[in-house]
Image (cartoon, rainbow, N blue to C red):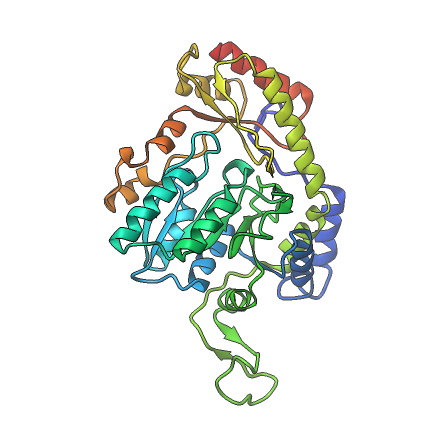
Length: 387
């Protein structure tokens, strides 16, 4: 990769991170030692939750969340089409039926208006969802208070996909601390905090936490309260449920624990870059991300929409930016338009707001270590191509 290439996102690894990982490598435990629980405890404290459970990926967390909430064959799960495929695949893994709710053009998250209408229709038909998976796209929290009120009215559980939203807040509280039954975060390399791969599930519910801890490790336990037979000795364990190897290692947790100390600083730097983009692009042919007074985005992405009066198409602007060494991207191709989901009966026109957003979407570079010079280069190139 050329030295002057600007990626759309990039992890930031400090000497403290390297030292934390090196120290772990010299320790007695690479996995299933004390560092994993220490990371979980620190994450739980920061997010004001009773339980934080480290998992191998956010996808694993979503899968386990569905299972813990009882999703299986015959279940109906709804989510948002403007997301990565994991937000829907997790329900299919359990044998459930998946459906979608169109987005709000401003938030690019689940539309409360569309959601309410779909629930009213589903109630009349006796086809209400068991679980709903709202997605905090680009790090902006969903309308969680309204979604919680609907959950209480119609009896579904909320499994929040906060893969983009580590460090975000809603109504003055950290994401994951209220409204959702379970919330899942991602630690992929381009996310706010990274463990290279990995994720975290948080909840205030003791029973759900116990179920997820069991399922992330093969359904095997040494806890006498969960075993069905009398222990035969210190070696004894029982498999009491069908689980997976979805654990987060101590090696990953050491990196995550170190990174967590700078999460708020990184979120603030991301927001400062977003503020500057807002000012520099104010006169361009773009729809910029919306701002809301009742929530704070983590600014995982700065996603524009290329409007019809732009001088070139989204595709041409994308190609021009890439040719100039700028790692622009598009988030996301709507899930329901993927060939696999089309085979399940979904059509492109089913969720028109999600498709209209996708047709104009452009994620431009945003990461904490981004320099003013890099940002100026992105803006200058973008305006030359579009304005």
